[in-house]
Length: 302
Image 1 (cartoon, helix red, strand yellow):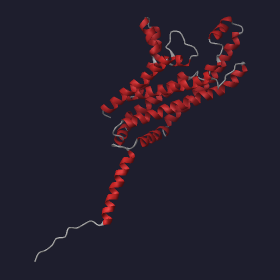
Image 2 (image 1 turned 180 degrees about the horizontal axis):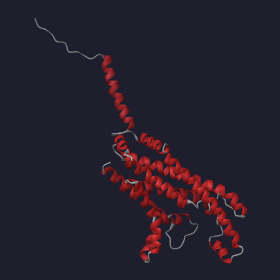
Image 3 (image 1 turned 180 degrees about the vertical axis):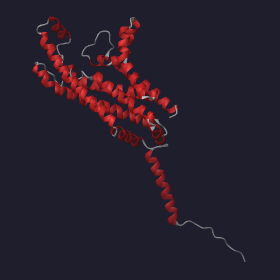
Image 4 (image 1 turned 90 degrees about the horizontal axis):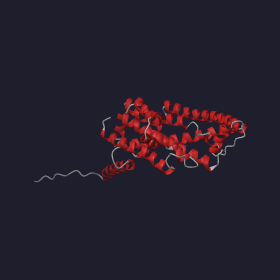
């Protein structure tokens, strides 16, 4: 008498359930990313949430708007006083004629130097705070490739800097209009030069914010990154101007802070770069530090 051993066979319901579970798992993993970590859109959303929920970020953005509008109003008053005195001062009248007689067009962007400092410092803080607070360990544990988180943070800071600068310039122009009208000065917000100033200056400040973010990733210290930014955009131009020698005179043209004037001038300013050359120089100042920051971000420990 022989005994027969029956092998247990899975039921159709069990087989289908197992296959469905494996299919759902594979489908979910494919829908997020092809590798470890969440998909880029989720990373971008998380970086935007971190950005807009920080009180310091809102304070810096609000300060940018207030400074730009305040300097626009102050510049409108000063320009009106200058034009009023030009009727009694031949030298002042000659300076107005040398500028084409259109003094009001640059009034809304008179506070750009302060906007680049504030938003550039914001770019530094967004990256350096990841390391000073220890948040980088959580961020890079969730995004092991690291570069998607870096790119997402870069997109958030550049887009915000561009939008805030453009809105601030426009608000500064609206505030300046009644002040300029008191001095019989006209400001056409729809003119090609006004639109060009708004767009170029907004792109320039966005580029400065990107440079600040790369400095924050390289230095990994908020104070050190901000001081590096200040040295590059404010101290270096003055130092290059004071140090005698043809080398420093020529090198001063290639500093990032001296690229915005050639790109916004109606006519080529002597001893400056051409507009397309200035754009390429500014692009190099943005791309090269970002590439170096991305490489070191992958190689260095958190």
